[in-house]
Length: 207
Image 1 (cartoon, one colour):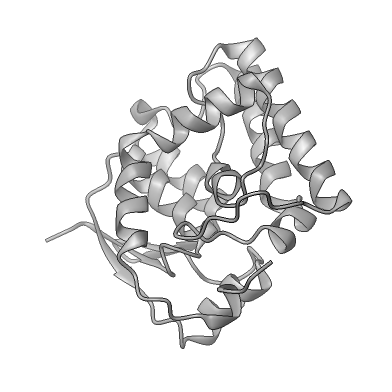
Image 2 (cartoon, helix red, strand yellow; image 1 turned 180 degrees about the horizontal axis):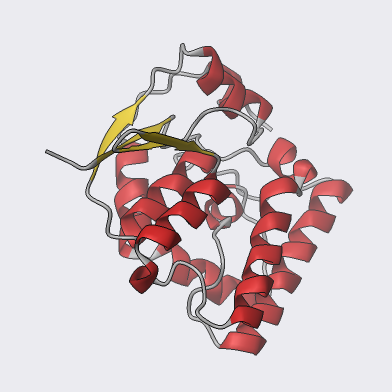
């Protein structure tokens, strides 16, 4: 029997659930995955309002429940520091937390204009100015981290949206995005997402 349960939303649409799932995989946690129905109000809120302030993903470990992806990350780091979810160096760890905090609480224009939809492809999609500024900031963060630490992995993905909406990236950012999409756990999630039925018509719209 698995030692933990991770409740998640749709794999095609649930970006916050993806983060929690990747963290558990990377931490080597033995967990059972439970996908909550899209009819659940909290799930629809996560997917349609694109907010982190709902109770998915939720990790149940022994008698403890942890929601919010940053809380899950910190908890998994504490119970298995050898997985190195956070850097061992104090300065690098502080930088990591700053980057993750910015990703977690910011980029609302990007989230609303380019909602996660792994199965979709919108060639030639034109992002409006507010979303473009978010894209530029993310690319800048990636470049800074690649220059500082060399990669190939950084402090968190947002790559599938860039593929879905045909976002043009500079060479360094495009290389990092490809590296993340080729990561075995990311490929596992993507394959499962493509098998999901289209349950939320609100997110399957033509731009």
